[in-house]
Length: 630
Image (cartoon, rainbow, N blue to C red):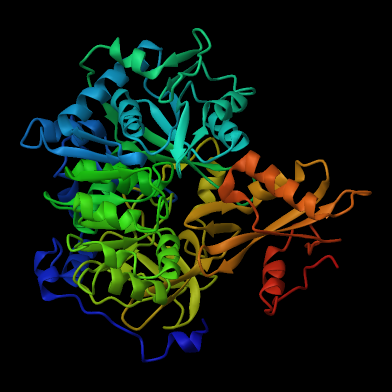
């Protein structure tokens, strides 16, 4: 979309029903934003005071660029706020989790049941020698035990690192060894599209060069039960059945790490994003309550896998902090038929539905006849996350799922930010194609290379000017990489690596990444990981990967491969290379297209210029190529 098109006056605007403005927790966006600007510490003090702290803070924020400390001196435990805060009041028997598995399986956990399970697993981990600060890797499908495992780690002060269960052994190994995990929690298999996908063999291969791992806890769900290696592999159910019933919540400092979540690196191995306990808790609570407007009687479904940051903040921690009812499911959106998600919304009375543009575009392609078969009248709010929601998808979502009654939150944020940063808050006019405005508490703008504001309607870089509570603490064991985030332009703003445009009303449109991350179906995939996987094949000398726009997935991966001398390109080799990437990184990282080439565009220092490949692929001007080696 050109800048001229962005300036066209015929921008569609949807005005929500006045009742939404009346029922929203934030009645006047401008008034609240000005309140935040006037006294940021007072703003965050008021939000944080809703939560329970074992020891109050000395300072709300200590900011020494590029480092921020939040709620300094405070002691807390996030699980005390997710569990006791509700169990000890009137939510003891409230449903915390509805879980729907394939073939009609269903599980329901109340807050009290979840509380008991978390304490038992917490004690089980302690019995294995897990101490405060130790890292635990969780490699589980989207089942209640994943939630229990995350909370059990947080309960005892251990640091969890959740790995998406669709990743292959190499990607898993990188995350286990990168975090120095002491324990791995996994399952024998996951269920997907009517089939069983073994996980234990993936873990076994990933542990071949993982010396820090002392034990593996395995949830055995299949019959016959898989055999376990004596002493090293332990049965999940046996372990918790022998554990004590009460587990004292560890008192952790606000600045202590809560979790490490790995995201794809642009120039090397995946980055371990570290989030601290206090600031993350406040950010997750605030945005779930005030942006998603989660209420007492809501049944809330975030379709993101807990292996991603969306699943952390808005699939688990945020809604549990607010005391909401979470819906989890292992169903994919088109199995056993393309109506399954709409059936689940009808069956469980889902009120808030938070999903990805990829899913929305897939449903668009299939047609509205499927959602029209089901009663979606319980829905009151729709959300989108993971990549920009294009206007066509927005309109379809608004008309056929929300029935032109539900506000749509097109949310922009990152693994590194930990919480929502830009969206159209409930009650404000919605502009399809525009995510919205910075939420109160966030200072974001669109700037040029130097960090100065660009004219209205001009393309620039989205930058964050001030710290916020849920910002990442650092990149694990790579503080230099963290510092690079806060080094944008002459003012040292936080660099989002996203291109954006701001209109005359302050609404921001995201145009895509400016770096070497490819967003495929809402998942961040690093070009470096794909290229490394390809080059690890004996036939490949060199490789480059780019994102190519796709109407369904947002982007697909296209790879360019230089073969070793004497290797002949064949269709079978293409198949073999794609399969090789799948085995190493998992299906989301497999190139949809692969070309054999004789050379790649590089700078004189040897860096591959992927933008030149991307421009050529899309038939565009590659821009300045003066630094090309040839």
